[in-house]
Image (cartoon, rainbow, N blue to C red; front, side, top):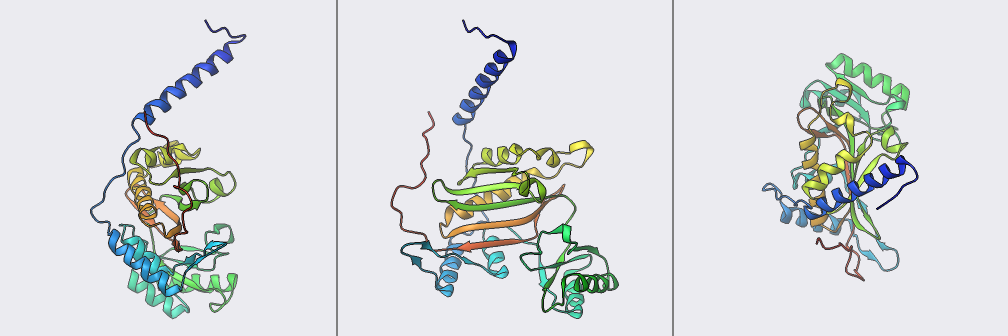
Length: 294
């Protein structure tokens, strides 16, 4: 009969036993990797071969393959093969181009810089949202030019507005020890300052995706925290599964960053994305290991 010097230790031991039992139940039902009829795996493979050949990417014998970062158009085309749409954005090198782009996309629009050190930096005030007409757009263009520099120094794009929701980040990368890893977290301070990010090995199952978005500490923001409107977590889970499939189907995809991903009450909206490709390195072992489910 176990004996404990204090009730607290007995409760902790019972909690560990409960966690272990829950883990055993989950291991017995790992979930499944769903199939999607709109995924074009063969088309994506052909695109990747063409892109790698165009960039002259070849494996380096000592340092491994050199990754190439795809252009925005190539990234969007490759993601579209897997049913992932990126919200349209058009270049705006001058105010007149910005107005034409806004009319083409339809008001309201957002105006934002493309420089890597300015993207995703809301604290710098470099993004203007919900611009409903030409006058607002031109005024915002002038303000950003004065704040960030001339258009030839800081490039801008006009993008369609996405519905309000929760800003998130979805990433995939190759870990030398574990293989392909899918990461998820909320955009901004939660991920950057607190490290509140959840990781899963690829391929991700439907159970993995559901648990991943619920495992971060800031997950309540997705489910109606303090009376806010819950967002479409089912659509978010599907996005994670599609990114996982892309990385799992094509070892040439060594990195994928989707940021920000707006999770709205209905649907998800990818505002920015980048993909890195490299020829798969020569394998010297059998790759990531997985324990058999007993």
